[in-house]
Every structure is written in C-alpha cells, then in structure tokens.
Image (cartoon, rainbow, N blue to C red; front, side):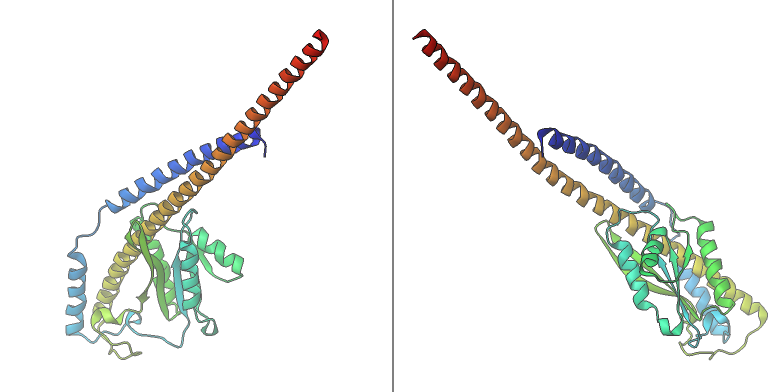
Length: 288
C-alpha cells in the first residue's frame, strides 16, 4: 500500500470515527431521556393486584383470559429493534423465540422490529411482522399491540401468548426474558389447570376484562420500555467497541504511514547522497 493510499485510509477512518461519536451521543441521549421519562407510581401494581384479589375473593371467575387451552397452538412474540448497531442482541432474541416455539403444535411467531424479521426471513421461518418499539413507547402503540393480542386470543387463533424481550438491567447488562401475558389465572389466585372456574354474572365478567386489559397495558408498556432501554444500551456498547477497534486500526495505519514516509525520506537521502558522491567523483576525474 502506497503512502497516498495509507493517508486516504487514515482520513476516511477519521471521518468514520466522527460518525461513530455522533451515533454514540445520540444513543446516550436517548437512553438518558427514556430512563428519566415518567413512570407509573410504584404503588400502582399493588393497587391493581388488590383489585384482582378482591374480585377473586367474592366470585369464582370464569373467563377466556383465565382458562388454559393447551390443545391450541401458542403465540410467541419477540421484541427486536428497528435499527442496527446492537451487536448480537437481536440474534439472541430470535434464537430464544425459535427455541420456545413448538413447531409440531403449530405455534405462531410474531416479530416486533425489522431486524428480527430480517433474521427470520434469512432462516426461512414463517412469522407475523408488526412495527417495532419507537423511541419512547406511547399509549397508542401499547394499546395497538394489546388489542392485537386480545382479539387474536379471543378469536381462538392461539391458546397462549408470551413475549420474549430484553430486560434492561444496566447500561452494560441486560438479559433475555419470556413473560406469559395470556391467559393469566394467577392474577386472580386461580390455578393453572384448564377450565376449572365457575360462571359469574356478566357484570363481573366486564370487570375481569377491564382489569386484565389494564394489567396488559401496564405490563406491555413496561416490556416495551425495558426492550428499548436494552436496545439503546446494546447499541451504545457496540458503538463504543467499534470506536475502540477503529482507533486500534488507525494506530496501526498511522505507524505504517510514518514508517513509509521515513523509508521514502531515507531512500531520497540515499539517492541524493549517491548523486552528489557520483558528481564529486566525476569532477575529480575531469580535474585530473
């Protein structure tokens, strides 16, 4: 590689390093904003749980939300990202979804995010694609996904729905988790067996639907938020690693460039010295 080529590589890598710095700053700002965004009061889940227990203590609750249907296929939702630079996070998420799926039972895969969809397409897997989580998940986004799950579940398209997502722990740490959303008999103190509950009045059924809907929205919002935090932290760590690797490559290119310049300078000095020496010898011969 010539000195001109080495210099061009160094200049290109310098520009690329600047782009990585901008991307790191953007990911860091998004991460801090999402961490500081408003959350539901810490007491809200406890109050919601108290409502579940109060209803369960007065009635034997029978509702599709609370009864297992093991003879039907399950739905596994995997929350991936819309953008890249997340390292192996999306790969781990899609692998977890494929491992959870029982193909013989006809389980369904639902993918949130273009990156997970791209991975499954490359593997030749069938799935349902839904848009991924935005910068800060809003109420409409949460309700749209909740309504999709509830409608498909009540229509009998699947007997169980679970979400596989990245749980945010810290900027440098996250883990893959799976959470079942439907059915949810444990919320009312019910057992996991199928169709054990007794019928209740329609008014109580409406209460069940309202409480489960509220719980689903709160749980999905928390999952979306955790997934986005994990995505941003993974992107930040991946960009930092890429920046460090680029710095290492630049250092090696810089050393090669300096050595190349020294070699060229040394060659030029030797040629000048040889030329002067030859000229001096010619002068001595002609003078003699």
